[in-house]
Structure formats: structure tokens, C-alpha cells
Length: 296
Image 1 (tube, helix red, strand yellow):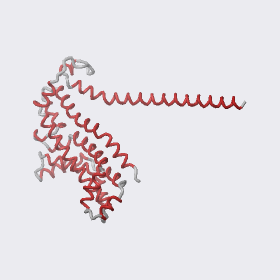
Image 2 (image 1 turned 30 degrees about the vertical axis):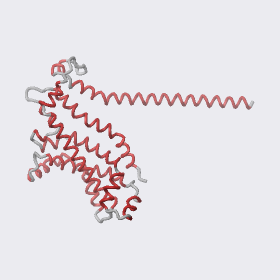
Image 3 (image 1 turned 120 degrees about the vertical axis):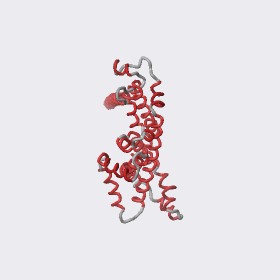
Image 4 (image 1 turned 135 degrees about the vertical axis):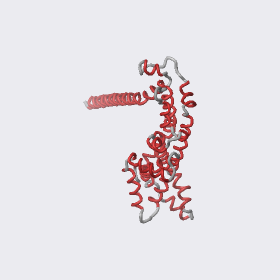
């Protein structure tokens, strides 16, 4: 009798395991299905834009918007790069973005190091002032900033854009860095002090290298914002030689004619660097956010 009960229990356990296994597989399959649908909705606009960039104006307005180009116009990219001056705009976007990101991350690291590692009376007040910057609407500062840059002869000067990007990105960058700095062990820095290491060497040779994951996170966030920003460049810059990609696209829009294929090619050119940077640094972004989210 006991053997029968034992076999019955084993059979019930095996049935339960099969049911759980089947349920897990169904749940996992549904999860993958949802993720695939989400991925399609996210990737399709990029694919559509790529095909759009290979069309003529006749195909854009005459055929279905979902139709493939009958005769791919690869010359749209050459037209955009050479005739439309996208090469110059692209270079401006690159060097302005890179300069702003380096300046923002470096200054934010200075501030965060001073707040978390140094004892001084106005420590909390300084942090509070930087955090107030998160509550200031960006567009409400356009007129005051334009008036200020006009008085100091920085209108139509790339320096006005770099300073603006740096100032507005500092609060968020500092906030992200703070969470990571609080997790860093102080023992390494204390040992360096015992060995006679100066505060500057501690920062540049010990602390800064240890913050590489979160620096990558803040760098990609700042890069995406700076690369896609339009309002400040459109307000402070008037010369074509200083315009970035987001503003330079307007040159393709004429009073009587718009070359939509060239506009699509310009948009594709502007998207590719951001995608490449994100794919390269995506793991670093996750590491930086995860490392800074838990204190211990």
C-alpha cells in the first residue's frame, strides 16, 4: 500500500512539474512575443526613414507612404552632404557635442567630488543651488541668455552653445554622479592620503578612473541631448558655418520647393552617430545606473 502511495505522490509531483514547466514556457513565449512587437514598433520608423531617404519627391507624394523606392536615389546622400552642406553641419555637431560633454562631465565630477569627499561649510547649499537648476524651464531662459550673449559678443559664436549646454546639463549629471560617488569606498583614498598623495592626484588618478561606468552613462545622456538640441542653436547661431545638423536641415526647405529625399538622407546621417554611440556604451549605461542606485 505504501508503495502505491509513494508512486502516486511521485506521479503527482511529475505532473505538477510538467504543468509548471509548460506554464513557464507559455509565459516566456508571451513575453518574447510582446518584446518582438515592441521592437518592431521601435525599429520600423528607422527602416521607413531609410527608404524615405531613397525616394524622389514624386514617389513621396504620389505613391503609398509605405511603398518601397522603385529607383533608389543614393544621390540624395551626396546631395545632402555636398550641396546641402551637411558635412559642415555634421562636423559642427560633432565638435560642439564632444566639447560640451567633456566639459560637463569634468565639471560635474569636480563638484561631486568636492561635495562627497571634502568638508566645507557651504557643502549642502552648493548642492541645493545646483539641484535648483533642474526646476528651471529651459525655454524661459532664451531671452535672458540672448541678451547676455549679445552684451558679451557671443551671439553667433559656438561658445554660447557650449556654455549653455554645459550649464543646463550640470544639474542632472551631478545628480547621477552623486549616487555613484556615495558607493565608492573611502579606504583607497585614505590610504593614498597616508602615502602623501595630494588632493589633485587622488581625484585624477584614483577617484576619476573608478567612476568610469557612471561617466559613460552621463556622457551618452548628455551626448543625445546636445546632438538633438534645436532651440538654442536656432536662437543664438545665424551663420551657416556654425550651424549644427538639427538647424541645418532647414536649408533644404525652400519657399517653393522642398527636397524631401535629401531631408530624409540628412535625418539618417544625424541618427547614425547616436545609434552607434548607444550600442557601444549601452552596457556601460546599465552598469552606471545599477551601480549608483544602491548605496552600500
